[in-house]
Image 1 (tube, helix red, strand yellow):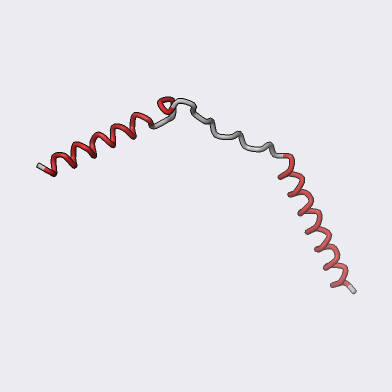
Image 2 (cartoon, one colour):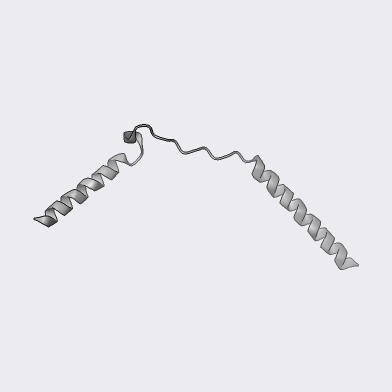
Length: 65
């Protein structure tokens, strides 16, 4: 009889913990969406991409000669 009581208590604790976790997850605000850039030049890393493309172009051109 004691083991059944322990199992009931354990099951109730699991249900309580599941409800608590569910409530905490529901109360968290949704993450803010990433900003969309209308102009590509405003996006982070714009200059870096073109600098790397320039270096690659120079390296390929130098290798051809």
